[in-house]
Amino acid sequence: MMYALVAGGALALVNIQTRPLIEENRRIAEEEARATVLPGMAVYEEKKTGDFSYYVGYTDGAKTTVGGYIFQVAGVGYSSTIEAMVGIDKKGIITGVRVLSQQETPGLGARLEEVKYGESEPWFTGQYEGMSVADEIKVDKDGGSIDSITGATISSRALTNAVDKGLREIAAAADLEE
View 1 (cartoon, rainbow, N blue to C red):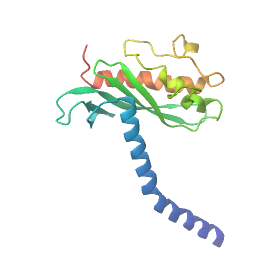
View 2: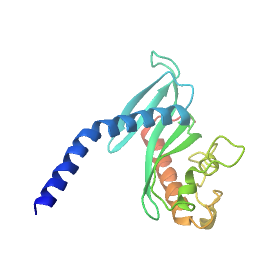
View 3: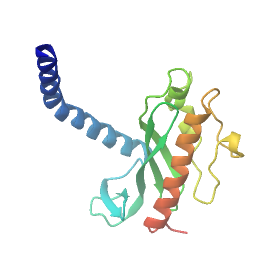
View 4: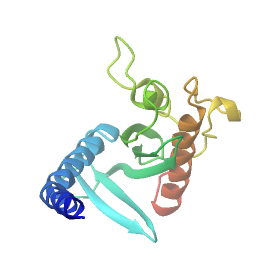
């Protein structure tokens, strides 16, 4: 009984001391992801429509010229929730997708973030670039154009469906140019 109390107390203390660092690292990762999925913006402003939160990217510091939008998505994969950030230009065309967190099976679902030899960006998330709400965003196994990761269809489908759903939500929430 005494060992359990000491161990529990030690875990609580470690949690209290590391929580601010973990939160700061997540904030930095999200800032870097915003700059990656919607590059060239001077400032980002958070907005909320109902339960849907997103960022408006402005090309100028005065917030007069909208350059695009950023939103986060989440899908339930094979062994974890896959969280990603998506950037679109003001016409609703995907400019980038970056996985923020996932705990999928190494060598299978974790390949969502795999960068192939000689390339600088993950190949799987790069497939979304140039797509828009007008496109049917589905994996190949469901009749779409996104190539699934071999042996990781559940992970591929989870992220793809989340991106598609988020894209439809941002189209309804933001004033996209036609």
